[in-house]
Image 1 (tube, rainbow, N blue to C red):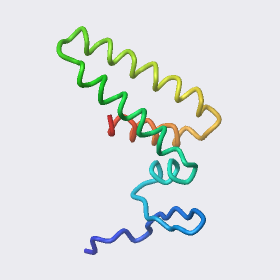
Image 2: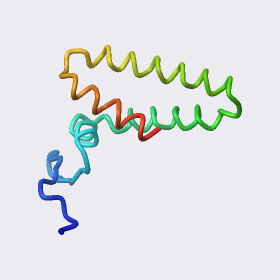
Image 3: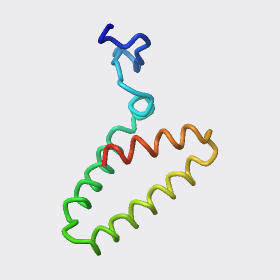
Amino acid sequence: MSKFNKNPLFVVQKDTVEEVENFFEYFFKKFGLEPLFNYIQQIFQLLMESVSDYPTLMVAKSWLDQFIQALEAILGNFDDSLVGLIKHNLLRKA
């Protein structure tokens, strides 16, 4: 069994070609959204670091749920499978 991906994804921008691991990474790199993603990821990390008890966890969960709902509303014109993929990957990274 080969360790290599049989159908790798590549992002081509001007003079550079870069391999990406999944569609989510491809989407963010292709449209230049990496700085935004890094910013959102830092916010999630700070939010999770502030959780020290159950009530704080519930507030953090509420904020994350609101963020996911807003993201789903923005992506409402896309296919449901794309929204599910983005939601799954975003929660996995947080």
